[in-house]
Image (cartoon, rainbow, N blue to C red; front, top):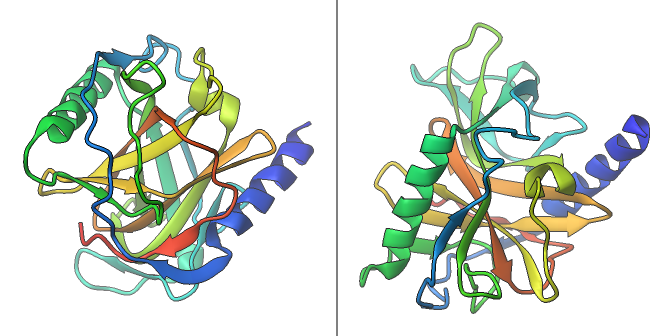
Length: 232
């Protein structure tokens, strides 16, 4: 079973990295009123995504060709020496992220940027709720534990059931992932769902990023364009 899932994850990572066309940032996110902010009770209490560190080029992660990696001192790091570290958020972190995202959606300023390549992006579920089903911190580091920044795009893959936990997608619903930049702006990033697995493509970031998964109205994306950097 583990071998089969590894093959599925590898295939979906190839989908998330396979297209070379660059998706320009689009402001076309539907301005929808949020009925309620809902955070899955499994986030921070019974997380199905566990703390893990894997090579940035593995059966659970992938690197867009041309992506570069540097430490804070400016030293270039070979991709083979970079690990992707994934840690589940606490319940408090998830609640804070959900509140921040809800405030961004309600703001008159453009505080949520669409880097998915899709137009008319929805971020609420079929009931009009901002429905957070998972929250995690993803960062890059060397074997010595030194933080690494990437300028390009990296992808991470998971079993869909691990991201959803106790939640389920209804008809006409899919998953959307976002992360928050240092300036407070949220970035909606490409998500691929196929064969029981989900991959998220993360454009350039300079430190560990808080990634929030929400249930949203829309169809699953099975192929996504690589994204340009949102300049975290």
